[in-house]
View: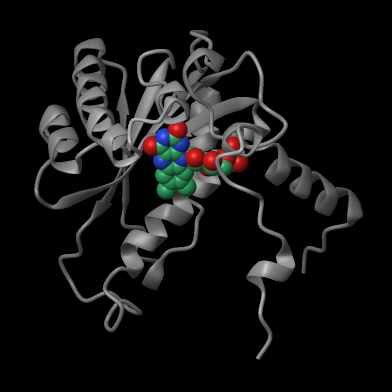
Length: 208
Ligand SMILES: Cc1cc2nc3c(=O)[nH]c(=O)nc-3n(C[C@H](O)[C@H](O)[C@H](O)COP(=O)(O)O)c2cc1C
């Protein structure tokens, strides 16, 4: 059995704490080296998956016209979102994506099963949750390479799939932006801005 020591545990915790959602101006245009991107994607596909179904697919979006179209989709959806927050100045001031500033975008898809998946017989969303596990691995390994990732969810999946020419056998799980950064904030931006408070362990753990 491979055993990890305090150094490894501390390092892992440091990477967890230093991971941030990166947006807009924090991205630099420096391209991500192929070898580094490969390592990040390898980390993603080492995630756990229900029945070892590995139902993920990664579409690397470099094409400027497609990214422009996805950005326009964000702008229109975000205008609707602003209304839900009563057009508050704080919401309007938030930069909630880095689609054009980041050197690459990744659409992460769930491939719908064509056969019965072990473990997914009762709870049908387990495959989709597995893809989220892959995204988290990707996010953390990117941070370990000093690369920032942003998750952009103010997008209609149907529109994104159309822009990228993705078929019905796939479901969009996450649309990510990725690149080297000018800085990683030391805390979540929404915490710094007072949008949300950080929950403590006591608030979220219950023993029964
Ligand atoms: C499923 C998911 C969707 C998210 N969607 C967005 C988004 O559309 N725009 C955005 O700016 N941040 C998005 N985020 C990032 C969160 O706002 C961010 O993770 C949170 O504020 C904590 O900050 P941190 O990731 O820097 O620790 C998303 C995060 C997750 C996990």
